[in-house]
Image (cartoon, rainbow, N blue to C red; front, side, top):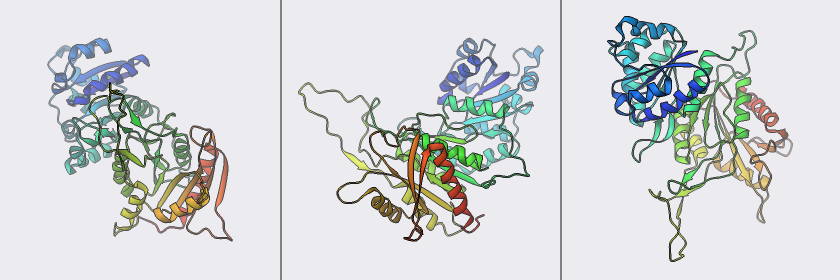
Length: 420
């Protein structure tokens, strides 16, 4: 396949070298078109060495080949990574002031943009309008990752991982078959946002506080929601398994990054399923250098502070919205162990009441239980549970249980008022 890789002028340009490697190792012929600004971050020689093709950003090089027309016509796919705010604006307005924007105007195949910029730039109304314009015209614009940006800032705007861009690019040229209109899924036309995996809270550049979550249950839920016809926005922390193909993937690392991603996605979602294992605490400070063992044998003292309760915040934000409730259905997850004061079910019921969500999926966790396993047992708690209608318990593989949970979501969703 002939691919054009456009490289915008952002610090994330160096990551596109890994993306180029993924394309070439998969056997594709890649022509790299950097913007002139991007060559201040990664030089032309790097792109030529990795692609095996000549590289230029000017329409006046190799004029006899009419590159500004030929490259777009011949490309089976055009991927722009990173797509800066400036580049998205120029593409949306149809400018043709360099080789890359000329090539975009001549494109006959799919075009995929992978944005990377500062959070405020991504959230700016002008950028949002440009993204909407490009999507309306048929271009694919990925959601940026949420994480560490230039300097010490963090938020939405991080370039998606090269592996995720590669997967989105392959899906663009080999789309999944559409669900026939005569047989729509029960969640067709609905957006389901699912969080998955375990957050990691950095201590220093090497170490972090984490948990045992593998992301298997979240991935299974995403696949079940896709099978039900939903558009799935998948917010993934650390996972041991890949995200299902066909989801809108957003990568995060820490609890605060996941919080930002959830707050951004929730108002545009019909259902929110909080399956991620979110750290309750994080270090109160991050060391810029690796914490060393002290010669005097003294142990380091690490002070932890509480992370925000993302599930409870999502419920509170929905109640304070003032308009139609979105998400219409919020599903929480609880991993619990019993103790001398109460059993797992008691703690689950307390958490359901405290969080205020519509459903709570309760897991009994422990050694060789739930985390990393292929099978599971969950109890699905609802505020409507009673002695005559006790909570349902599902046992089986995580895929089997995911289908049961999504079926319950479908059932519950039918009972809530329609939202617009």
